[in-house]
Amino acid sequence: MRRVRIAFIICAIILSAQIVGPAPVECVPEEAEAIMAEARELMREGDASGALSKVERAAAVAPHWPLPHASLGVLNQLRGRDDLAREHYTQVQLISLLREGAEDTALTRDIAEGEALMVYLVNLERAQRGLRLLRPHADLAIVARGHSREMRDLGFFGHLSPRRQNRRPSDRFHNLFNHAPRAIGENLARMSSSSHPVFTREKLRDSHERLMSSERHRRTILWDVPDHIGVGIAVNSAGDFWITESFSVLQR
Image (cartoon, rainbow, N blue to C red; front, side, top):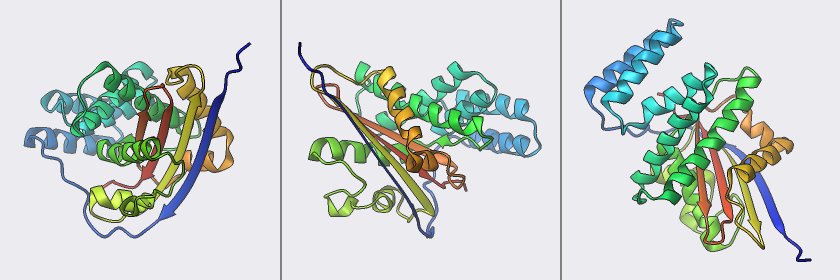
């Protein structure tokens, strides 16, 4: 009988640094910006239903703007509408992938759905403990996905890249956002098999459970400092996968 080997590896790190510049500004219709501002005011007043309605309008006005979808994901997950939450999380991840220049293929959508599942599972853990849910961020996902791809392509696994310009999580953040992170945490996971593809929803859920069973990774997932999460998955031709979860502060 042929022996099957499945390898799973995880790694976690939390770093902090002083913020030195503004976050990137999205180019979106002024109407959508105004509607989102109204939604934020309603949230401050405790009117979650009114805020949800406003954010839905903003998403209709600017369907390719990830911010309304990220907010809709969080608001729907808080209301127990898990399918809708994952749908909007997937939209954020798909926008992120297409923004990088990926083709809109079945694999691209599978990766977007897989990344969205990891966002959902992280927020599920946080919701169960009364912690604020993290909004997925399209650009932070690009940072995370870039590291996953480097690990896949360069044959290493860890927080320190062999490429000097991408050495640390804070370097990778700075390269895209052009400022140092106020705080950043990173979880890594890898799964491979000698006999069959492992890039499945079941194995992604298994990856999350293994992260939660590790004290260091659980601490990163439940860290009370970040307000955003970026998840990036890389897959090879054999169906092995690499996951990077980036946790940071991006609220303006």
